[in-house]
Image (tube, rainbow, N blue to C red):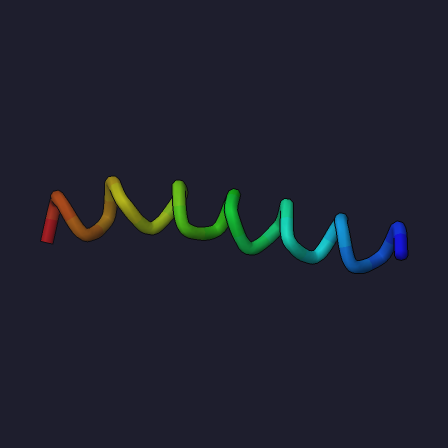
Length: 25
């Protein structure tokens, strides 16, 4: 259960990291 929550947080953080790159490109 804890692992699932961590995976979701990582995926959300990954989406936030992708936003600036998408704006630059």
